[in-house]
Image 1 (cartoon, rainbow, N blue to C red):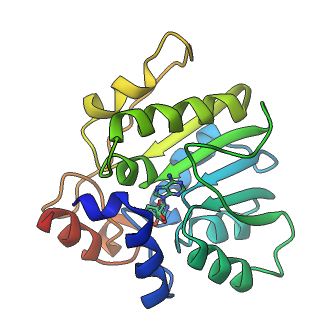
Image 2: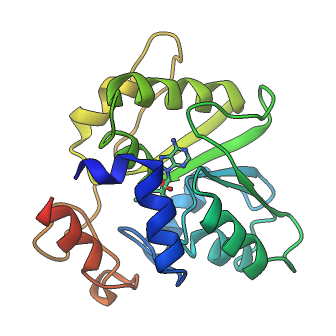
Length: 204
Ligand SMILES: C[S@@+](CC[C@H](N)C(=O)[O-])C[C@H]1O[C@@H](n2cnc3c(N)ncnc32)[C@H](O)[C@@H]1O
């Protein structure tokens, strides 16, 4: 599982497989929940976008401003070429633990699987804390940090429930659809891709 926490793993994976792939959920499975927290006009930061279709599907549904970052340069190159016609979408190679954005510029930071990935790597506790501190810094007052995670809530809340942030944290548990403890994107759950990610995590 530690491989998921290294930039080399992701660089290589995206180079070998440039096809779109969504971890856990497609937009269809998250749409209702996201609409409770994000307005279509909000400035959204997609942290660790990978080759997911989440940004694209949100954009097609009317979200107008989505900044996408990932520390894997190959996927940013692929995604920016794929979506070059979409005004309001940007793609940058950037580390989520050290963002180049100014303070208070986003209404929402959205992370699907990126904190999970950071927690698989070396110095995971410090890096996860840095990632949350950076999300707090770039959020506007009243903004939302949304994390879609495979982890048990208590293993993630420890990073979020800090006095420094004064965040009000809400946990939404997604419906299970197969043997893994999170909802994956199977058609039964209203998402897509397959059980591939579940099998990968379960193999560890
Ligand atoms: C499990 S994948 C999730 C990808 C995508 N968000 C999705 O839902 O399909 C984790 C992603 O986070 C990226 N990532 C991991 N650590 C990162 C970091 N410190 N900064 C930026 N991106 C990171 C990886 O390159 C990979 O694209």
